[in-house]
Length: 127
Image (tube, rainbow, N blue to C red; front, side, top):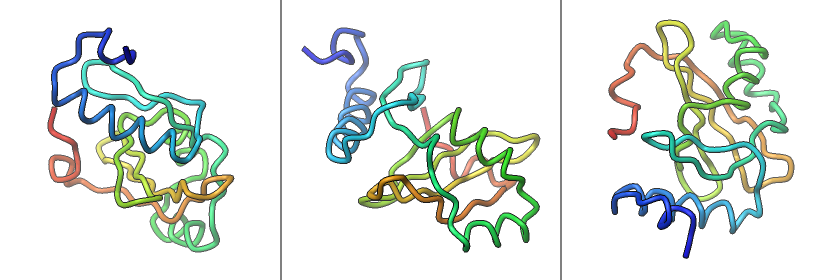
């Protein structure tokens, strides 16, 4: 029996966790925890992600410090799949939602880009 079954999660949360677990197993990624609704967690390591040149230039243009980006990678509120091999780590940073896109099909993972948005409801996973 998997840990989420023992935790008594509802079927929607089980499906979300199964998808993340499959992604984690496929990429053999372990480490920090992915936050799920109601405090449920799943393994995903983004803390050692490298920042690409494109991401650095976008961070400068968008006035996002490396410290804020690293904080988000170390402690995201959500990690959502974008497509195979790419996830977005996101969470609140002041009045804005900070979204960090990471290619996780590499070792170490690579930050592709990051931006802040005030359109929080558009990008938050409904729970």
